[in-house]
Length: 133
Image 1 (cartoon, rainbow, N blue to C red):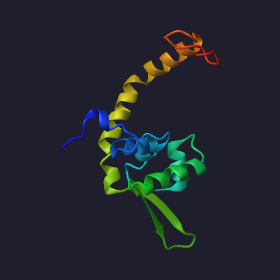
Image 2: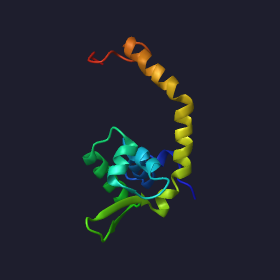
Image 3: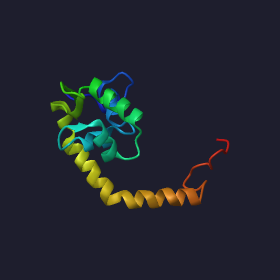
Image 4: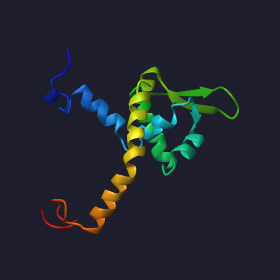
């Protein structure tokens, strides 16, 4: 039985809670970066680009806590740690690939729109930044 559309976005609904996890600023990018298999933290920093080590660690922990990413520590000296997708995390590969494909096709249009909005604040039905609502 599928939930009614109006209920899936209630604050305590599992659907909304799940969407909040996977739509965090770096979550989709990290999940996408892990799609080809386990990766060490430093390599993941390089793959993602623009994320600090601290924020990446926080993102990985949140994804781990929610069962999407697993952390594997190898008993070596020095210790080696890798992150990879769990079985549940792998179920997001296709939706993320589709979203990424969409972004590739429409990214320039979105950037153009952002630049247009920045050049003409107050247009498009929005009040200029700092203006009283």
